[in-house]
Structure formats: structure tokens, C-alpha cells
Amino acid sequence: MARLTRGDLGDLNMFRQIAESGGFRKAAAHLDVSPSALSHAMRGLEGRQGVRLFNRTNRSVTLTPAGQELLTRLNAGFGEIELGLETLNRYRDRPIGQLRLNIMSDAARLILAPILAKYVSTFPDVRLEVVVQDDVVDIVNDGFDAGIRYGGHVPEDMVAIPLCRELRWVMVASPGYLDEAPPLRSPADLAHHRCLGIRMGNKQIYHWEIESGEESAVVSVEWAAILNETNLSIELAETGGGIAYCLESRVSKQLADGSLREVLPAWSSMGPAFHLYYPSRRQLPEALRALLRMIQSEGVSA
Image 1 (cartoon, rainbow, N blue to C red):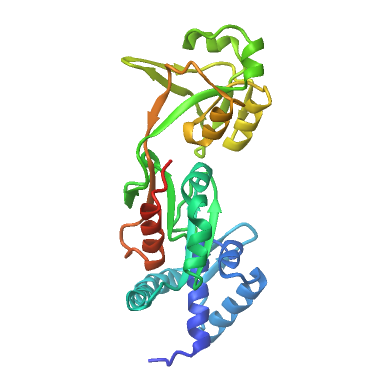
Image 2 (tube, helix red, strand yellow; image 1 turned 90 degrees about the vertical axis):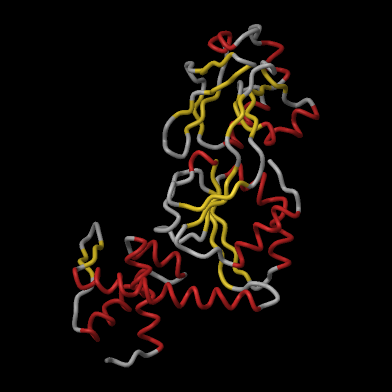
């Protein structure tokens, strides 16, 4: 059996990252190296082993049969190594290592932002990377340890932990807009208003779902504008651009100071809570466990 060197182990880990991310550029970003350095390392690995591991074209990088078999065995081996290193965290005063999170924008501001400074100061040995992204992503293939999404949007093969109670969605607009706009007595009147549509992470436009007691309605109008970012929708509403539909918690300050008013306050909607999720086949990393404890102990709530 060939004896492995430190360089071989590093190159094999790079190979694994390239294979799992589907290309040199994504892997390079994750490993903080240049794509050319990765390509050079892989050519060296293939040369030493005398076997081609990748099929390279201008548009894609795929594994050869030899590369696929190597990846299967490496995943098992590196998985045990990573589990062993993670186990050591239980014997330390505080966790170390890297924690990569993919979080939707609403959750980033309502769940993570209130405790972020405390977390990074309490656990200085954790290299925390947070990607705020509303698009639907595969956290495993993209190299994330965990994600935060609404409960109804967590993949079924993941472990999901609720981080708050159910979320209330409301319609809001500025006093100036409402003073000059047509009267609003029922959801049907929204057809005569400038409503701001939202394009969700799955690329679909969301049709507002609202209810009042036993009654319910779906708002589907000619949108005055379609946005894919909650902040912009709220800012547009604040400046008189129209009616936005968002989490009540995202506009609690504006509602309190009067810069926004709730539209048709008898009509709103309750939706799934934010959930933290991670792959079911993995042990919960100690750095992630510490974050979860902090969220729960600080009483962070949306």
C-alpha cells in the first residue's frame, strides 16, 4: 500500500471539494485558493497516481469512473476524520474550527443579527462564515454546515430545529401613500392600489395569502413592482411607493414610530417559523450547537 504524505492528503481533500462542488471555481472559493492553483494540484495528483480523475471541458468538469470510485472511498475516510476532530470539541472549553451558514435575509436580521457580535466574541476560535441568500440552495453540495429557512422550505432529508414561534405576515404602507390612495375596506380593494410583489428564492412570485377569522383570500393583482429583497420592498413602502407584504417583526420599529401603517389590520397571515437545519447523516457540530444554545438562551425571537 502506498504511503501517504501530507501533500497527498491535502490534494485528496482538494479533489473531494472539487468533486462535491461541481467545479474548480466553487471549490477554490470555499478553500480560499485560486482556480489555477487547484488545477495545478489536481494535475500533479493525477500524474503521481497515473490515473485521470476528471473529464475537463470548457463548460464542465466531471469525474471519470476512477475519480467517482475514489470520491466514494474518500468521503467515508474523511467523514470519519472530520467526526473524530469534531468529537474533540466536546473536551474543550469552547469549540474551534469553521462554521459556514446559509441564511435567508429575514432570518439573518431577526435571528442572527441580535447575537452575532456576542457569538464571535465568545467563540474567537470559530471561523464563522455567513452567506445571506434567499435563493434555494443545496447546503451539502455548496459546502455549508447548516442553513436557516422557513419551516415549509426545509428539505425532508434534513434535521430541522425551530428557532421561534410562528411568524405573522402583514401588509404595510406609508401614511402619505394611504392618505392619497383610494379607500381600503376589503382585500378586493387592493386591485386599485400599488402592491409590491415578491419573487421568492425558488423564482416564483408569491401571491399574498391573508386571512381574517374564518375567511381567507389570495391577493393576485397587477404588481406595481416585483422585488426579490425584503429590505427594498420595505424601503419602497416607506417612501410612498406602495403596499408591501412582509413579516411584522421586520417593520415593528416603523409601525411603532408611525412611518408605516398596517393595511387592512384585520387581515394578516401566520406562517411557519424559522428553522435551523443540517444534514441528518452528520453529527451536530459543537460550533453550531453553541450558536443554537445562544439563540435559545438569549430569547431571540422573530
